[in-house]
Length: 114
Length: 108
Image (cartoon, rainbow over all chains, first blue to last red; front, side, top):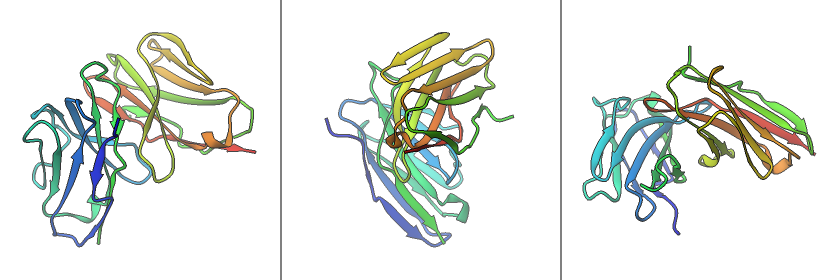
């Protein structure tokens, strides 16, 4: 079984630029999560999708962050415009309907904003 | 008060010893509790989950939950150098919240 795929693995941009991250969950996993993990901190949930609907986006900074999961499979997270404090690892995770609390994480995208 | 609190460490134990990692949480209504292991530069990996008060054992790992004290712990028996990592406690109340993690170092 293939794991959660993410790309790119690394991205360096200047502040005020835009960036997009892509995630493909484990096949058949209906729930997809995006997390932000700042160095030295635990992951913070940004948004949770159930199929192509949003379950929780209460911690997503909606003035600059957006996410979509149009066909209920892969997902894109966008930051526009980026700030210095957005430098972090962006993790995507997925879980199945049978074991909804067991999340499997992708390798993450390390974003550096200069 | 943070929603999920962990001692940042590092916690250093000799090889073969028992490592004890602790976590407290603030949401009394929390129902599900998880321990993730995260190696440096890698993504978190689920190692244990517990839903009921008491102990749950899986190989060298034991999770302990005390809802009255709002406390969950992870014991690692016969610690190995390969157990050296950051251990993240995660709690589901009305949302999933991670602690900042405890760094564990097992010295050979």
